[in-house]
Length: 85
Image (cartoon, rainbow, N blue to C red; front, side, top):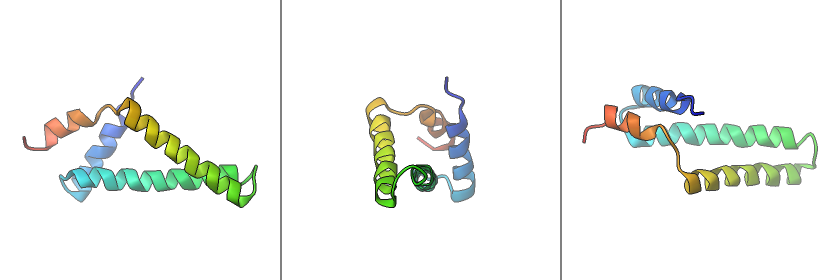
């Protein structure tokens, strides 16, 4: 079930950073970097540093491939409301 949280995140990004598509990308880039750091922190408890780094990057890559393959939801609605045609 989709909660709509990503739509609210994109709305906040557009309100603070401007009504550009690049503002949504910057927010998702920062979230992705935070996610890699979290994965590294978790993996570093169970593996040496090089293996933890590899595991965190593979998790990030897996998320990217799944988003590209299956697509995302919620973004088209905000684009229709906020961006001019």
